[in-house]
Image 1: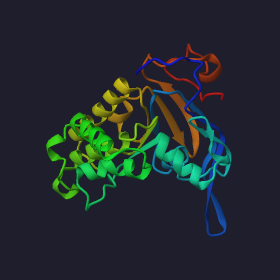
Image 2 (image 1 turned 135 degrees about the horizontal axis):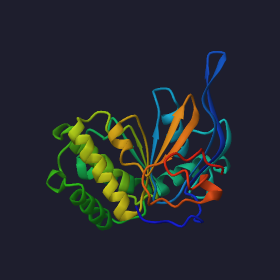
Image 3 (image 1 turned 30 degrees about the vertical axis):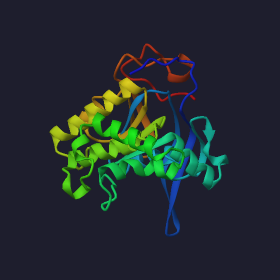
Image 4 (image 1 turned 135 degrees about the vertical axis):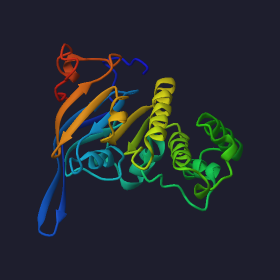
Length: 261
């Protein structure tokens, strides 16, 4: 992972974030007082059992849901202060998404699925879109499958299309919700290797939710959630910047306490 300064502004900052859902007449808490910062270029895994709040946390970072209380800042923007239109623009500008079910458009081929976010942005010419899409198809090893529709691709190939689609707008953050859940072990490992390579070479921040040990083994940091709370944060690789003011005691390399933001 590219080195980032310990004093660099975090790309994600959550401060005392809670989220509850209404179930009949009862409020069901999903997140309970989350404090977390993520620096640019990190490869962070959010892990925990089913129901621990992983997907809810990812949805808040992805600006597809709003917190019940607390501060959620993404790329320097306090999301609570943004209109729906501004949140949409933030998603298009700064965020890419990879889903466990791929979420490809069945009637579009691989090229068109990857191109789609650029069409939504409406900022590039046809030639610029083609150049960027073809470069990514080459990068993920699917150049010769550009005009295949999703039902003509394997699960691993569809996930590679989804990765390229997430990266085509050159987002600062890529969010991946259980990206290997529907893949066999070998294919899932290859997908994670590809994303780690892209993270290292391009400096894109990756944030995963998963319970897959192979995904966890690639993490720079592992954030463990239990019952909507951070149970611990472990630094798994030594190339992360450690700031005593933001990341706890740097001597606790193997088990960093939940950060004070």
